[in-house]
Amino acid sequence: MSVFLSREAFRKACLSGSDGGKHNWRQLINLLWLTLPLGALLGAMLAAVWLWLLEAPDPQAVPFYGPAVVLFALAGVQELLAEPLWVLAQAHMFVRLKVVAESLGMLAKCSMTVVLVVSAREWGLYIFSAAHLVYTGVLVLCYAVYFLRFLPSKEATESNFPLRNIGDLMPHTVNGEPLLDWTMARLTWSFFKQSFLKQILTEGERYVMTFLNVLSFGDQGVYDIVNNLGSMVARFIFLPIEESFYIFFAKVLERGRDVKSQKQEDVGVAADVLQCLLKLVLVIGLIIAVFGYAYSGLALDIYGGSLLSSGAGPSLLQCYSCYVLLLAVNGVTECFVFAAMSQEEVDKYNLVMLALSASFLFLSYMLTWWAGSVGFILANCLNMALRITHSVLYIRRYFLSSPWKPLRGLLPSPLLCLALAVSAAVTVVSESVFCCDGGWLLRLVHISVGAVCLLFVLGAVLLTETQLIVFVRTQLLPQYRKKHA
Image (cartoon, rainbow, N blue to C red):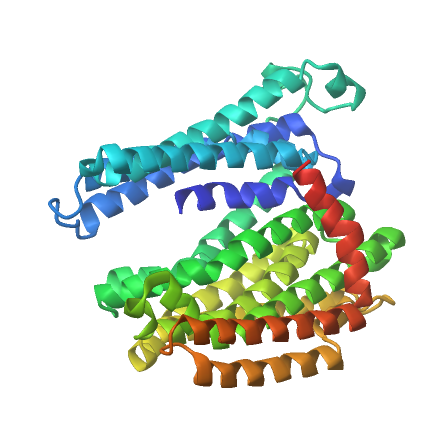
């Protein structure tokens, strides 16, 4: 949490396209280094809350709880050492650097976790906190080594890279220049206020569970497992799309300016990309919602046995499958909105998010008493639907005076709707007939039915969503190959 609050606002502001996308990078580097003391302050405050205000677990059951909390806080501060370099790399499209750094960090973290779990199981939470500390250390090391080699190179000189030497990466002033870009600092402050509210909207149910004890520990455990399983698609598919195309929209569009006062070619490209992105995440989300309903019980039975598949787990995962659809659409609409909004509009939206945060916490509490752990997902769905509504209205106003209609991306073709409806009916019947108490043979029959229905849906996509197919083939796949080249 401390890392998210410390860096989210700086990332959004410093990757923006205001002033035609031209930045004074020395001033931005100075601004970005403020993430470090901010992260240290927030980390210390949250560590104090977890150590002294919340009830600590039994030391016999969870050994080394206190030191582990401190190590996690230190790991967060250590990760922020790479923040100026991360923003610099993202702004200049050093895609491979991010992939390599995070891959090496995750490999080191997993390796250390496995080694310590096998050889020193009695260390308890020390294992996971130390492994996370290693992850952030490797991450910082990768970025530092890359820029230490890149800045003095001929490639940096030929590409007119804005920084010339290692000293430029440190906070410093240049004669005649202010220490900070105050326009960017004010925009950062607006996004910083928003990040608090976004954290509540994103993780609010965990605070309700932690402080109000509305669920038993067993129900909380099942909810966490389902939440982690369901959010895998959001983390590994939708989040990278949102992050990459926020940077794209921020570079193409000029923040705070209407459509008519910008280059029409750039606006047209942004509108076409937004339409295709909306169609892409809508199709993926609809497929997950349709097939997730009929295969949630089987997935949980395979993952955790009857302990997960016999209780509220399947209902939770079914609801979460529908929630993923809303997550997907909201991620794309908000990445465009936040790239286009002026600072004044961001401040106004913060008031909207304040109201959404309060209503979300209230709904989480009330719906959980009414529907158990499913109530948390229902509250999330209502909250996400309201955020989507706001973003859709903003996008509609933004393109109202232009010939582009990117919101058409939210309208699937009739053939695709028919294919999804037929698949939903067939897979639900298949689940009731073949799954999941008749042994593995009947389970395989159920899986085969789903595979055939999925091919039917994908065939409908290929036949009717030609613009989407061209976009994926010409834009997304080359970018993926570039990342893994």
